[in-house]
Image (cartoon, rainbow, N blue to C red; front, side, top):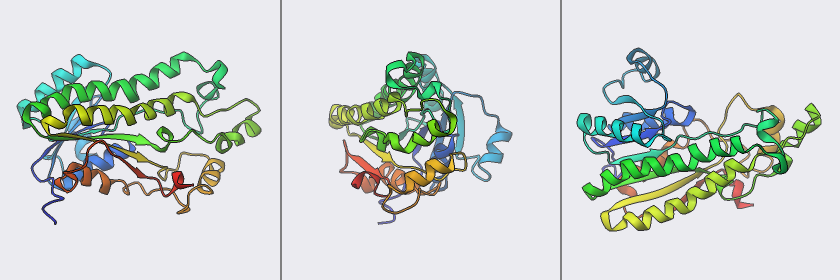
Length: 272
């Protein structure tokens, strides 16, 4: 069974691999013996890499490419293939959101929600996944193998409960509503996953989605955390490394008969 879960020697792409969760996924895959190519929209030097991933510098490289720029993705993927070969694994992790402690303008009521924020989030969270899958996934399909893992959210399955954010208006005196764009982008990933799973099944590329709940962070307001945890049956947020297991599972042959699935890891939030 240990070999079934192995990713030893495989090449993995992790978009947004320098972010909070992306760092965990990149480190976990590299520690398991995979060669990890992080696609980042910002340059990242070798000294920074050594500081962030000590002891794993031989297994992790950072390639500069925005998920919203197809030309950059194509050029970067070409470099990666020349360096390490065609990827076996793609983790579409890059994403943006308006946070509970963000500005009221970014979380305005639907009637006056600025289109620019809709465009930014949809472009990164949905169009970015489509473009990266198009560029990297087509290489996998040509090799007749691969696993694509799309990183979703509970807000792709259920609408945000606005009661979780009501404290902001009481505290700040201005309307604050969890914006529509994030939920719409993550909901779109559900059917994009199904579409690609069925489209590429004949060429043995598997495509699955993981829908995560909250992860422990020091940046969120206590009022939000307290209200959120009241709605989580396990009564806590996920630890920062607690999602690594499902990524490893979907990247490995242990999930070889899974495609088009939505794996929910949320402490039970969507069970109520």
